[in-house]
Amino acid sequence: MEVLNPASAGVAMSKDAPTKPQHHTGFDRLCRYAEFLNFGDFHMKFDHATGLRAIIAIHNLKRGPAIGGCRLIHYPSTDEALEDALRLAYMMSFKSAINNLAHGGAKAVLMMPKVIHNREAYLEAFGRFVNELGGRYITAVDSGTSPEDMDIIARQTKFVTCTTGSGNSGDPSPQTAFGVFRAIEAAVKFKLNRDSLNGVRVAIQGVGHVGYYLAKHLHACGAQLTVCDMNQRSLERVVQEFGAKVCEPEAIYDVDADIFAPCALGAVLNIETIKRLKVSIVAGSANNQLAHHQHGVALHERGILYAPDFLINAGGLIHVAVIYDHASEKKAHEQISHIYYTLTTIFEKAQQENRATSDIAEMMALERLK
Image (cartoon, rainbow, N blue to C red; front, side, top):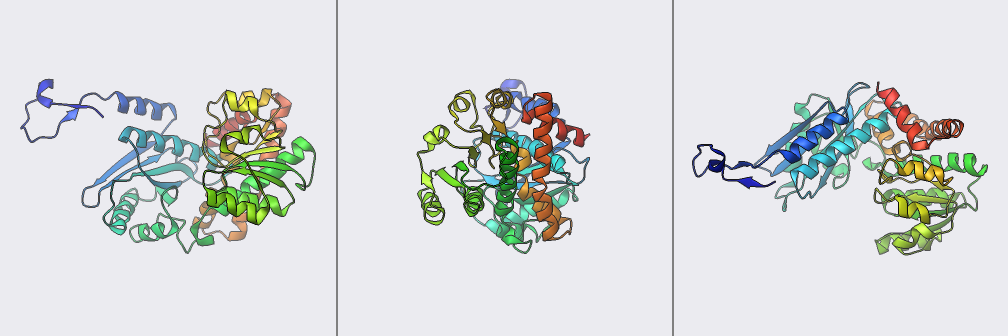
């Protein structure tokens, strides 16, 4: 954020005093953005001893305490970190509501410094920050954090999940992949009228954590896989284990297949890429796949069945929420599997009303948030 000499603003201060922001345009815009999304609150913490600069955005508490991952990555500015937290927390509310979880949505972002001199002290400081909120926010693994990190945070607060002792080593990727797999089964049944995935052609964009486990499920059912990824080791793994074909990342939109599964970056579905798709179904694990809300309508107009991302990639959230609420692994698995039936309901309603599935899913989530 730009700064100026406070004296030029008519403020009497010593030469050693910190400068004031030149303007609040960026922050004001983000506050308006938060208000537009019906946010409850967001909190910031600076811990000078460890270098912690953290934001916790709590979108909604109507369904219960808010749950969401802790993201530890580099941000160019505080404005961008706050915007990321707001956007992701909002989507977590949708994920929780549409899957009938007794939780609201939230997100924590930790603005990674150039050097973390003591990672344990850094994460313990964040744990104290979480604890100060008194259970309104429950933290979990996200980009840049691990189950081992959650163990450290748990020294300072009980409001944490995804620890190494919370089942499946705290990694939510297998559960997320299972939810997407169930969504693909539902979409294939609805669109292609097939009860089996044997021979179904799937183009997977990104075969890292979730993409790999999705490929494993699909291969076990006899699906034919074409994949792309920037990581050569990830590609070699799915080629060796599942006999997948490989294409260049930019060519994945042109693959002649039944299903396109975006499992990497968001905002990959835009006017240009949608025109190139040669598939009947889009169903993947990536967040915010639609570059713009209207692109869900564009898919609908092309006759491509879209499985809304915030519903089908919620398997990891469902798992950690159910386990945190002291239910069993079996209960979590059953609730993730139920994504099949929720999605089928959305498909049927979208067909009856001749509307985009993304619109129907958002409407359903908003109704449950009320």
